Length: 596
Image (cartoon, rainbow, N blue to C red; front, side, top):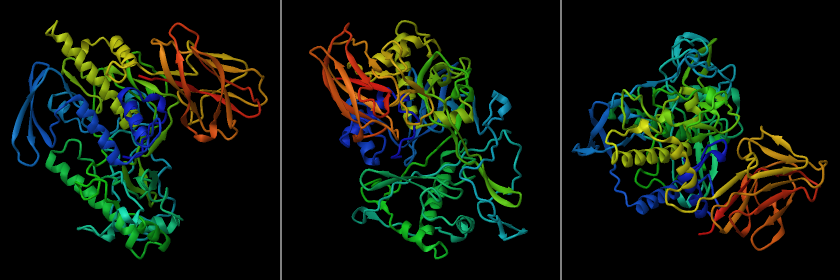
């Protein structure tokens, strides 16, 4: 996936943030959230080389040996040769999308959607909503208007269950597509083996009613990436999501999963080919689709098509602590947070059926989260009576709808680092107490380490000061607090309008733990009345000076202010002022990066 979804970048910390900084460096920026797949792969390989880790690829888990509540060893087999190998360890981390290790270890889990009544939620279970939905008038029957003629391909004969009721169905999977319009770097989209144009009759009926002017949003979400490439995701009622075809995936064996994956691949390639070549598709849509092809320089080991099906949700562990909708909306806040989530409570459609004689999709939910929220350490460890040396940072203990917010890859990266730190702490503790386990971890010490050593390399930690940090951000004058703008960094930002009192400022004074040079960046959210120039007052070891920052350079991004010397135990830092008092000024966040 070349396009990162997160909701609020403030939630991404540690090595996950470092990854996006390295992506930024690759493209000449501080950090960047869109990228070409090969660029991401190169960075991950750099991490492995730096850590001198041996990675074993293409293995399938076949057995788990436990002694009481302790996993002693696992057996894996090579996916091609079938040769088995036994791996022992003190602590295990199941970081898979499927949760195979937790399942074979006898840890409780669930698949599907809970009823709203189970955890006192509003957006779990069956939900017939208006997003990615068929408009009125799309007939689902083979012969229009005749229910006795049968249903078109892809439409279920199930009856819509009551709103909020639970089931074992999974939100749809798809392939996130990297395509290019560069003819020089393009492999044509050709007719796949097994193609059947009759599978797209419902798509034609949707197009007939909707009359889309272009592919984007109506038939797919085309998102620009560097290198004249795209990240394409599902958008619209009939798109890249293969609705209803993944129900068996979570508990399927490897051979059965491979069939499901291949079916998704055939569906996706057929969908693209159909849009570009079937004469029943309007000419302007066919012409637009024909511009795109698979990039020659991506996924070179898998015929330029992504080898990874997007597993949005499979198994979810059920531990002693379950993250729910109440955490997402801030009704409950944990104190053992080891990472944050910030995305909308998001579920893709789960089924396609007939409602009042028309085709409808069910299951799509997009409900916002007010602010980034912490994810409990207890949600990544199993019940103590079930397993004591396993950490589960991906298939963690969360309800379906809470998982919809948590399930973003940068969040999984944060939780993965936290799980790795917890495992290291347990192994160190075992040297003193052989019975130490994941339930005994000192979470306060863990949180301290994640904050003070975010890149796990003992380097000087960067300092991020958000406007909401009352200990390091001092507010003077007339500022409004905005908590709703989606471009904000953190839970809110401060807004100073032209008619506000002159002389207002927000002073960002970090607690520098190490004297030295720091690069200073100011976060600039997008706003229609934003001042083109910010007057910044910088107080450093050597001087107190005014710096004018050109905000037109970039929006919703960090803008470089300069490099300055700062000392510990000094009131050093930067202030954002309304000195021009002619346009809106926003004070949101300031970043101090140590120059090693």
